[in-house]
Image 1 (cartoon, one colour):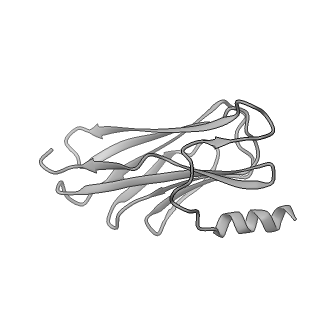
Image 2 (cartoon, one colour; image 1 turned 90 degrees about the vertical axis):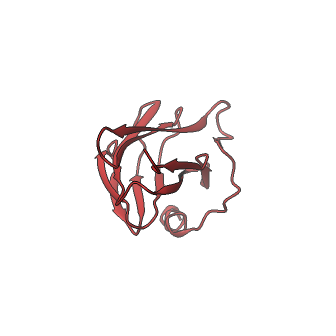
Length: 148
């Protein structure tokens, strides 16, 4: 049963209007919070990106997905003990069991082919809580390189 749920979770398409935080009914106060920081690498069309995931005691399966426009090059710096890969303009970090830490940080660099790009940046984190798949989306952002 668990594996069929996990398989459906991995291939599912999640609706775009899901909540910003994942709430667990088993323990009040357990909420997943997401944030992202960008730091421009001087003299290059590159940024270092840090995604901070506050899991607050939620354990088990977890997946971080970041979506990129075509042509962006991604290099994973720190996957926080996940199985990480970049494929089809997506970064995926998968944990069979989330680390026993209140916050997980995933770091990577993104490189752009030129300096005239406006990137609609989005990502999401999914986990299983009470045998139910839960997803939260990070606030979509525009990352602009025009004239920088």
